Each structure stands twice: as structure tokens, then as C-alpha cells.
Amino acid sequence: MFLPLVADIIANEKHTLPIAVTLILVSFYSSSALLNFYVGHLADSRGSQGSILARGIALISLAFLGFALALAAPTNGVLYFLLAGAAILVGFGSSSYHPIGAAIIQASFGPGDSGKALGFNGAWGQVGAAVSPPLFFALVILFGEWGILPVGEEYALALAVMSAIGVFAAFAIWRGLKNYRIARDPADGGRRRGMKEALTKGILVLTVLTFVRSIANTGVSAWLPTYITNVKGEGVGSTLGLTLAAMYIGAIPGQLVLGTLVERLDKRYVLGVSSAGAALAVLGYISVGGYLGLACIIVFGFFSFSSFPTLLSLASDYVPRASWSAGNGFVWGLGIMGGNVFGPVIAQVIIGEDYSRLTLAFIVLAVIGLTGALATPLLAKAKKTKS
Image (cartoon, rainbow, N blue to C red; front, side):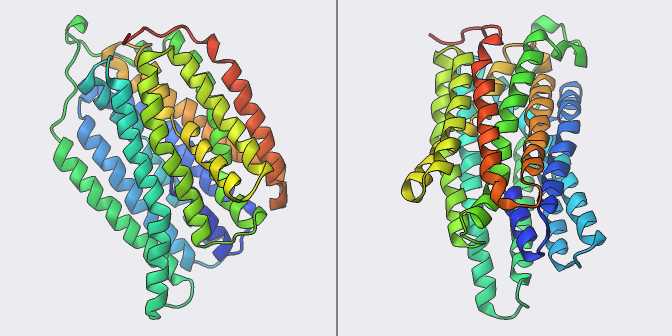
């Protein structure tokens, strides 16, 4: 979630065209989409969920050093090579987290409480996302005040510090989960499930709906820093960081509330309401300003970042226990990350080289989101887990 901000900073610092932002986003989302399902299947077959998860977080963190190098590179082919390469590595690393993390939670808490547990875990993820932009800009200001670095290089050093924090976190995850194994369901007789067991009709329909939802939500969130910087005229600074933090703060109660609701209500309609709420919040944000605009951003965060408890809670209802990681990986990889590829591209096609057309792009993306929300009844009713 830190990546769109980094893309915006690099585009402004290096004075690149919008295509640089699109290159970073598409490289990241494409590489993650390609590996999510495979990594989930690998974890199911080998039973090494904890160590695979830790390695992925470490790779994400180290890849951000590539963006630090890009800030020092000349604005030519070398810059674009570094941007694409670093984004691809971030994508490879991120492919492990959601399918494996969700499977660990689902196995640990069982079907009756996994929605709430996924929401709790996702809420802490949003705490990290909310803290990252202000922390990054605080580091930039601190290094700038030291006066020992050339102008602009404080961004690179701040990225290096953020990378070091991520590597430390990956080590902590490895220490805590290196021996974790998901116990097999006795009904499976100990046999290993292949990929085809995860490709049920329910998973396929959910993936398509997820794809549409992801196009709408990620198309907006990925370009939001650029929208704030160029259309709202706020520039790169503390206002940008605080606005993004507000969006992620809104997602904290959103994860908890929606994670609880999927255990008590029809999961399809919880998903549909969250998709519609995010789309309507986008339309509100581009129509108003000031505190009302900030409120709309908070509402957008509340609904749009609820995929972890809503989508993956549904996914576990459509596949056998032994294929949870693979099923999660299919929905997250092709649904979420696949849609993430097309969302920023649709925005890029609409804006061309003119950032002012981002308003039109956001309207189109909101309409796509509403369309996906209306289609959620196409899903088969998930099994009821709690009265």
C-alpha cells in the first residue's frame, strides 16, 4: 500500500510523464497476480506456510532499495528499468502474504470465527499502512534538516530506512512462524490436493466479481496520491501523507466491522455493500473539498480495503480445507491483483498525458465499482457459519 506514494514521489522528483507511475503499478500488480495462485498451491503441498510468508516480506522490503537507487538514476532507460525491476520484485514478494496469511488464520480460528480474525489481522495491516506515509515524510524532514545530503537524496535515505524496518519485521515473522504447519483435514485421508480442487464454480464466480471490484478500487487508490498532488494542487508533502493516512485509518474499523458482519449476515451482501460504499465515496470525494472531502476519503478506506475479511472469508466456503491457500491465491491473484493491473491502466488510458483528466477517470472507475456491487447476488450463497 506504500507503493503508489513512492510512485508519485519518483514521478515528481524525476519529472516523468504519467506512464512512469503506470509502469510501476502494472509491473507490481502483474508479477503478484502471476504468482499468487502458485505460491498458495506450493504452501498447501509443502506445508511450509510460515517460512514462505517471511521470505515474501523480506523480498518486498529489499526491493524498495531499488526505488532508492532509481531516485539517483538519470531520467532515461536506466530509470525505467530500475522502476520496473523493483516493482516486479515487490510483486513477487507480496504474492505470498494474503493467500498464506489468510489460510493460517482460517486454520487457526475455524470457520465460525475466521471472518472476525481476518478483520482483526487486516485492521493491523491498515495500521501499518496508515503509519507508513507520515513516518516516511517525518524521516524525509529529519534527514533534510540534518543538511548533510544533497537536495532530494533524503527521499532515498528514508526509503532505505523503511526497507530496513521491513527486513526486521520479516525476521520476526520467520522466528514466530517458521515451524507452523496447517493440519490436514482427516476427511482428506492425508492425501495432497491438486490445483484443480481449488477451481470450483464458486471460486471462479467470486474471482470474476473480485476482478471488477479490484479494477474500481485500486484504480482510484493507486492514482490517489497523484490526484492529490496534481489535481487538488497539494504537491508532495505532509498534506499528501496525512490524507493517505486518513484513508488507511478509515480502513481499520472497516476491517473489524465487515469482518464481524460476514459471520452474522449473508456474505454476498456484505461484499456488495462494501463495493457500492467505496464507489459512492469516490463520487463524493471528487465533488466536494475540505473536511467533507477528507470524510469521503475515510469512508472510501472503510469500504475499499475490506477484501481480506470479506473475499477470503467467502473463498474458504467454496474450497476444501486442504486447498485453502490455493483457493485464496486464485481469488487474490487473478481477482484482486489481476484487477489491480487493469484499474491503473484504465485510468492511464483516460488521462493520457493530462493529469487533470483524473477526475473523469475516477468517475468511470466508480461506475465500474457500482456495476460489480449489483452483480454480487450471482454468487452462490455461502454456508452460514454463525447465527
